[in-house]
Amino acid sequence: MKAKRLAAEKAAEKIKSGMVVGLGSGSTANWAIKKIGEMVKEGLQIEALASSVKSESLAKEYNIPLRSFEGLESIDIAIDGADEIDKNRNLIKGGGGSLLREKIIDFNSKLFYVIADESKLVNTLGKFPLPIEIIPFGHELTLKQLQLIGCTPVIRKIDDNPFISDNGNLIADCHFGIIKDPQDLNERLKMIVGVVETGLFSSRFVTSVFVGFENGDVRVF
Ligand code: 5RP
Image (cartoon, helix red, strand yellow):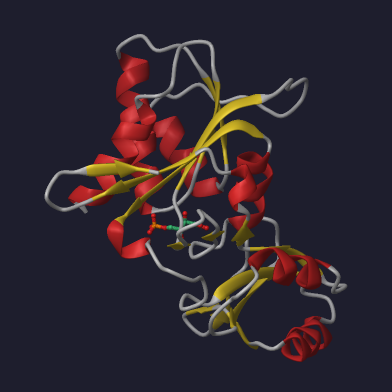
């Protein structure tokens, strides 16, 4: 808990007045949103975009000014959590099911800071099942295509009902085992009709990763 908060607050300190800020989703991103809320209370002037309905309501709770995408020139900085981070800074995201909106915001941001505790660091991605957002229509066929690519997909459920994303889609949690080439896998998955987006986030878009440790350290790489 402390480690996530430390990483989140350190990254939030990079925000300056005048910036358009992308707010991530998840427990670590929530710490960043709270910190940004405090900074706004102290006079920071920003406009924010939320990557999930939950983040939007937290931002409203903390009086963070939100804006729409209409007329948006660019996003200056996005701060978001991750489920796995490899040594090259490739990520698996989507544990909270918000991967599509997160990806739209994070990949369109000039600066993308990833925040996490040390438990998220791995040598190679793949222990965490890869979340993939898929269209409900004909999803049985989409799951078959995912199987052909080499994973065991499981439709995410909450209390025995399918989890529905903020975009009205399903999430297939895909067990691939070790992912040797995230870029190649992402490209192959995106070719499948019915796949909306994957939780593989390429290192090409990551500016820095802030990792918090329980002893109070924050390492940036
Ligand atoms: C949500 C995400 C989250 O950023 C990811 O699941 C990490 O969550 P947490 O900070 O709670 O460990 O991708 O879709």
